[in-house]
Length: 200
Image (cartoon, rainbow, N blue to C red; front, top):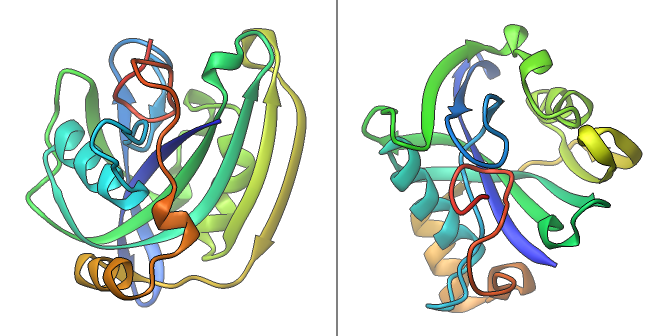
């Protein structure tokens, strides 16, 4: 199953998440929906999950991540098309360089955390995104049928979050490489992902 990334820029106030940057998908798979930014992990250059996260965010909204932490690991099974199946490694970013900019793929916009437009997002988002906004780590699986109807779901949440800077990430890969950081992308070529790039 292919690995993919998903990133949400966040702004905090008094220790709580106040704003979230979403992006409107302008074309391809998921067009017309608000989402985070991201895409598949490339295997051509033996890209790690976090390297893909940084690259995709730069390409899609023009910001360079410097501090981020993983908030969810989401498995998506698409019964109508198994080629879309993927594990999406989801992150919140708290520090970055530059301001979110519109690209050919995505149009970013800031939303108050209490005003997330769930009716214009993927139908699974309402099940797990509120939990990570409450600073839980979520592990979930969703099975989709035709017309993006959720046929099955399984979700667990744990109140543990570790924040990771770009520097810390590089040091961890150099000193204690973990299984997650060694994981690579799936099949070569283009495919549908929940982020913005490399979708059909």
